[in-house]
Each structure stands twice: as C-alpha cells, then as structure tokens.
Amino acid sequence: MSIGLIGKKSGMSRLFLEDGESVPVTAVSVCGNFIADIKTKEKNGYNALVISKTKKSNNLKKSQKEFFKKVNLEPGSLAEFRLDDNIEEVFEIGSHLTADVFEVGQLVDVTGTSKGKGYAGVIKRHNFSMQDATHGNSLAHRAHGSIGQCQTPGRVWKGKKMSGHMGNEQKTVQSLKIVHMDIENNVIYIKGALPGFNGSEVKIKPSIKVS
Image (tube, rainbow, N blue to C red; front, side, top):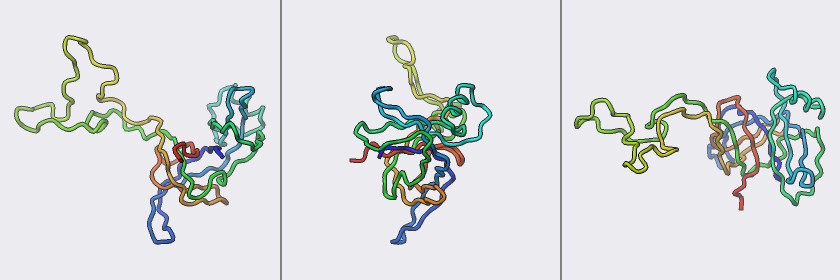
C-alpha cells in the first residue's frame, strides 16, 4: 500500500530494543487524517489520494471552506499522495486513516520544512573553509574567495554558493525506519531526526527506494 499520512512532529526521544540497544527516535502524531478527495486515472490522468489533517486555522480562503464543506470534513491541511496503478483497494471520501496504514520495520520517506536559520555566511551555510588568520589577511577571515570569472563570460554564474537565507526549505529524508507504533494514540516512532521544529507538519509516505 502506498498511502501516506500527514503528521505533527512531537519531539525526539529514545527507545530500547529487545537486545538493549538504545535507538534515537522522533515521535510523530498522525491524528485526524481523513481522505478528502480521490483522483483516478480515468478522470485526472493518475491515481492519488488527497489527505486532510484536521487543523484549526482562521486563514482559509473561500474556495477552501467550500471544498471542506462539500466533502463534509473539518478544515485542515491537505497533501496529495500518489497511488500505484495496480492498486485494487477501494477508498471512500471521508474515511478515517490511522497509524496502522504503516507497520513496524517499514521504511518511509519524511518531508518537512527545515528550521529557518536567518541570514548566514558561506562558512555556516555551505561549510566553506576559513581564509588565513594571518599572512596579511585582516578583514576577510570568514569571507568567500573570488566569485568572478575571466573576461568571458564576465559575470557571476547563477547558483553560485554565497551567503544568504539559510534553512526554511522543504527537505525530504529518505529510508527512515519505523521502530514502534502506538496505534491507540496514533503516534509513530521513526528512527533518527526529521526536518522541522517540534509542532511542525511532516508528510510520511512509503520509501521509494525499497528494493
């Protein structure tokens, strides 16, 4: 099954496995996931599920309010997850999805928005090396080197690694293992760190690199 869920990052902890190994995990709450729309290959050109996670918000547009009213669901965040063309399961709009969509030991891809770090220089942002602390270098210890070219093309290449806004970007961490699940409380424990701050939304879907 290739259904995904929208979760809320609840923070990091650790779990002890049966052999005594300590595993760092991130707890993700997946409460309030419902099927808001179903896209089919005949109508839309591909198969997908639009999942809604209930969320209090006062910034909904009129079109969004009408959409949730039409499908008889509480307003929330939306995310689309593609389905396999050969999937045979029948879905219904309004169906409640819980953590048991996944299983312990399964590998998943998690997408979220990384923490914003503000304006950062090239050393922090791109891991550049510092310039000399001596030998005549007075004011450029943490500055990047030359960014220009020769007379041809005589400009700075687009995409050059320079200082700028760091973080606050969509990031996907692939092939993370589900270590434990609390089905009763709809909490998934995923091994390792996930992008974003505690309380931010993440999208969980089966890993695309599973052989």
